[in-house]
Image (tube, rainbow over all chains, first blue to last red; front, side, top):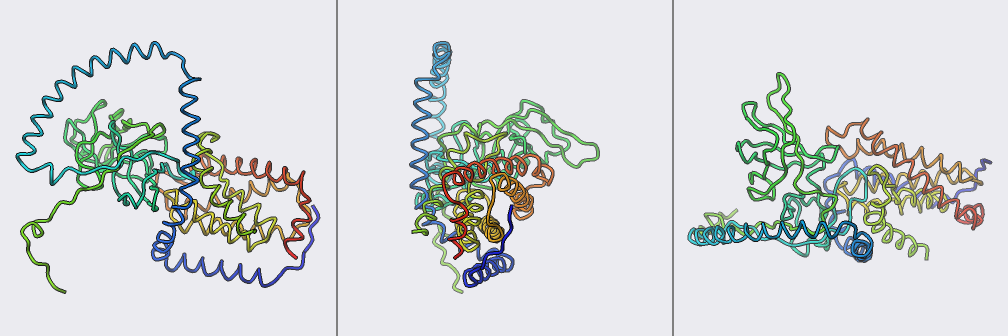
Length: 290
Length: 166
């Protein structure tokens, strides 16, 4: 390799240096403010990028669909028979649940509960995955213009998927329940012990801070506690596969197998909290003047 | 014209990185095409182009990631700037030297990232090195080397590099 110094155009180098210094200084001195500015400016820019993103995702889904329909047809007959048997069983269960649901609806209506407490949800499609290797996220095709905001819970009928961490005008980024940087308030359904569910680096989840006296055991189901975060109470998170009790530790923890496989999820529901009037708003109490 | 090409690179790379690359990931790690693009742009067209495209591409990619918006922009901008400065010092660069260079720079950028992002305690330094930094650096170097080799065999790279600095 021959090394030669070329004559440099100083103006370009100066501009580059000044820009670099300004940005690094801004990054060090005003990280929060710069973050807000970048997020605000990013929303329309994200909208522009969302067009090719959705187009590529559409083509990708189409190819995956064709592959699924015409190429990967092995063992379909056997699976079909099994599904028919399951369908019969589910029809029977469905009938029973309809009865229970009707009763619940009557009672809920009686308590005016439905109107005030049940959250609304927005259906969205998964169109991509995290652009980096550091986080486990999915990208949805709905964003701020559809009412999505940070910290809203994301679920499927099977259970919790994650929570929204970032939005642009037409897309949202969801941090998965299996990411170690995620934390969701959980509850062991049988024992009613509460804890925090975190993801692990192995792609599973872990319930931390379970009281030492809890008799939780493998096979117990963990659901959302509804205390904090964008989830109502009782949405399945996972099943306990192992309990870890260390000597002299203040708490025990449990390894969970998530109910939803985040790598295969295609459609999700984003939970939007419905407007619940405060006591003051309901009674029409005037607000204090500054 | 150059600005339009850079805009197309930024707008085109994000969908490819987030939708298609999940299928060619190795052990769950995918290459960072943004890093490769910024390195090549800095190397071939100078530090200002590298810096600006790096800032814009890092920021655009972080809009579709849980990563914070500034760190990615600053890291990619810095990589583009360094690539530009390095490119200014050489007249002839073989694909093999470029592969080694990409491997080293990708490792260095990867080692800085966990500290900048302040990840969970589970994601410690060793975990980062073995599960993300090294595999990603290898993939980046191979893909960058392949793209550069294609350009090297079809274009007069030395001429492009000298013309862009005149």
